[in-house]
Length: 269
Image (cartoon, rainbow, N blue to C red; front, side):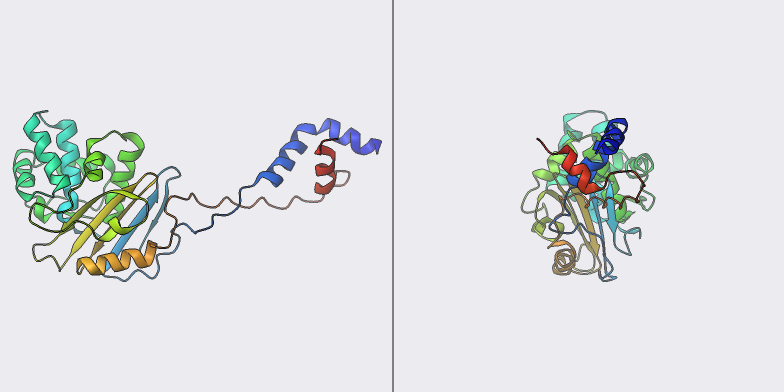
């Protein structure tokens, strides 16, 4: 077929590209990425980001300013590490805030650096985050927590904040067990928790994996937080990127070989 060969010769590069696109499209992921948080109860806010692609999904309450509890210690610790006086004592107190959620350490650093939370919020674009009269009355959102942690993983992966989350103690300084909420999700390698003094009116958990970050906040108990997180994300592959978009069908062009003819022409002889 000389006519076909002439067409192939003149358009070899685009035809090869089309054929490769048609034959090399990756299959869809076996498990879905978090795409529909519509059933998350209003008591709970959940946010998730796949860091390599920037894919973000959040529940209806994800941008709501809720009690920040001890999750705001992440913002404080980051400020102390990067902008503090560099003393060993400050670094030790910052580590204790993250690893064992030490309220005393947080109060010392909050008195020394009262601007820490608000400066961090401004730097990272945490629009629902603000310091109250002291660190313990601060507010943040799960979207802000995820935005902050994703930025740290993307631009500062060696940050001690992430390392301290990875080495969090099983029991906090006040005796609270730290093993619930987002910590229960597959692929999690580090976490930070927060809870009200009564341990049941409002709680929060935030975790990191190799390729993702996730945060939650529940007006309720640690059991409610864990249940809502696992119901929403427990069966989802949190490390999988979004499935690629399908290649659109090519329009029929007079004189252009069909896909079958292209594949035959490209086949080894």
